[in-house]
Length: 571
Image (cartoon, rainbow, N blue to C red):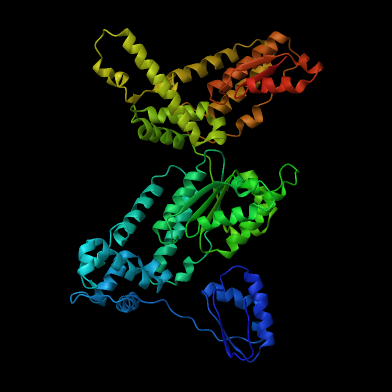
């Protein structure tokens, strides 16, 4: 609160980044007008002072003087630490000087962190040296020893030193590089790393003072939670987060169950995340509107309180909102302030079949200690593309996990069957078949080789050509579709992108033929699409006369579920 007395000539205003920034601007403007002869000194970070300057009308009439204090050099921080140690009653050993303190400072924190924290590190360096001495000496020796700091006291625990921090950076960098997919996250972290490197080489540290809040969107299983956890570790390892804190909550947990509970609950959650990262999954639950529903007051209050807390602590923590793309778009439209508080939005793409195969292989190794036999990884990628392509947007990485779990069951059944037969000596050429730690193609349900797949397609093509003359229009349609499918989806994979082909060929009305001929054409179409991997389900045949009696909705739902991934033939 700006409380100014007329008998005071100078007023120092500190804490410009504190809550109620807008109110502070308004109060400052009024006080500056009412006390034109007073000297006001506004103290804060460069961004806070610039925000105040742009928001106070008095400064547009009377430009204030500015004084920008540069960051302290490591030698200056070491001198401050030495003074604080002397003031606390500690002395330095003859072989320990301020250069030793400077070396300890540089070995504990990287230069970009030193530029951000400045004199705060002098006190922390002194406290760590004292703690290191107390931990080194026993209680009896502490009572009788002089308050002298030796060189071992400056060799701080490696868990807190630069060596550990550098190791954390290397570890998190290797983890990022080893990620399957997630190209948007990798690009974002590469940009951040360039800024950190720029500051470490002497660039303006204000470049790292920006808001780190981010929105992660993606379909189910796209890796939003994994990305958020990795992002928090990356920011901590690079000194952009001051605390090793990661609070993970569902956004519904922000909402109170009674009137007056929501606001304190949100503030408590933000306070628990201070200095670290707050991850809110399914954040679209705070949109307050869905399918025309205005939502509830608890969600609106939770969102407003969250935005206020993030604005008041915009550089004190990183908040990550995650959810499905369409729902998150509704959330961002619900309150324009969200885009200002969350300047970074990353859309995690669906995994490609090859990426899912790689995730499956790594899951098999990490969870079960299994490996894939030679050539199975490539065959699994083709199998996922052919059989599970429609499931990828709905499941993503969980599809890969499900594939491995199903393969585990088949592996157990196969080995149990081989053990039941017994007797025969194992064939050295088939050593993988009896290895309980190796997954074969048949364990993934990959029963057809490329040659058999080509044979299946050729058989369907032969039967299409044998259609009678009266079905010539259907024959020509199926032959044309067969040519397009063969070009877009060859047995070996690759070739041109045919992902939209079925969108143009997924509906067919057969008229002018008797029921038997129409069903024969539909069955050939089903086999054609299945042989090219565009359908994974079976053919479901029903009579449309059921639509004429009673409520058709349950009937339609049943056949939709039955024909999922396959074809529905309505007679």
